[in-house]
Image (cartoon, rainbow, N blue to C red; front, top):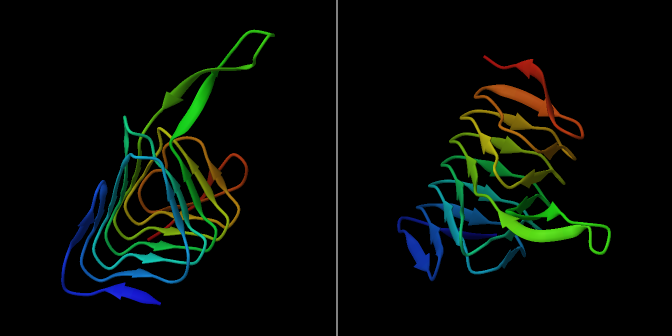
Length: 146
């Protein structure tokens, strides 16, 4: 495990807060902005698909499970000649204190509220309120948390 303690690190478009823990390999694709807040934990295999036009912002004190993917890019539906039409991009915001379970996928345009939990394997396609548990494909609120 590699931990950034007591300082902020800025490398190009990546900004890491204090005490961020990177626990094994992970990947950052693209030239977009990535911000990770203080005391956030990144498990092995976390992948960020960034885009130059939008940002991914992960809050402080978050726990991101193994093999979680953040995907900012997509496509409009094209005509029959090529269904993946014009490319699109939308940012992602994860609030403070969130837990995102193993293998979850968070798609562009999504905001996850403070203290939310995303169950393992969930696909988050729309905003998640604060202090709830979401699960499933697509992710839906299963429980309100105290």
